[in-house]
Length: 194
Image 1 (cartoon, rainbow, N blue to C red):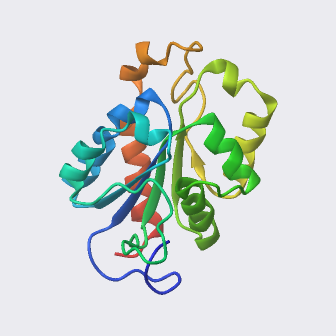
Image 2 (image 1 turned 180 degrees about the horizontal axis):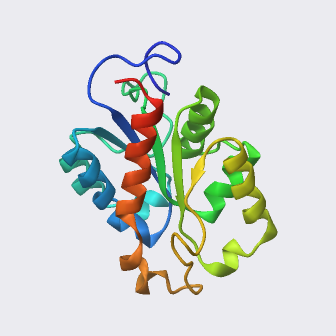
């Protein structure tokens, strides 16, 4: 899925893998992309199949200069992703959080998350779901597992209060994209060599 020697990244600008899941919040992913680009990062976006329904793919491709991947590539296709300095999964759906914690890799997003965790890459996850989904016991268990494994999970009322079921579009403008960017940037500064 990614190129280069295991654990080694060639010199160049820091690389951000932005993984986008199915949520209306995906429409605002350009906010994180623009923050990273303004600081000299090379951004590669990957969308889950449902994330692709919400993400403005042509706009993200235009500003990053890279194709947005939505599926595993066929062995005959080119297009490996460069090794990331930091991985951000925003928005992280309830489905993705639970599958990731269970080790399921049935989408490219989940495969990259599993691989990134295995490589020990810094990962920032920002779940975006409604309070009823988040109230399911499996979700809290999944968040706890991910945190135990070293993932920075931005979750809780001090980050973003989950919305009413079916009403996320009313509060998504309050989502703290700048805080997500600060977490991403701090992970690179602390854990990744220049």
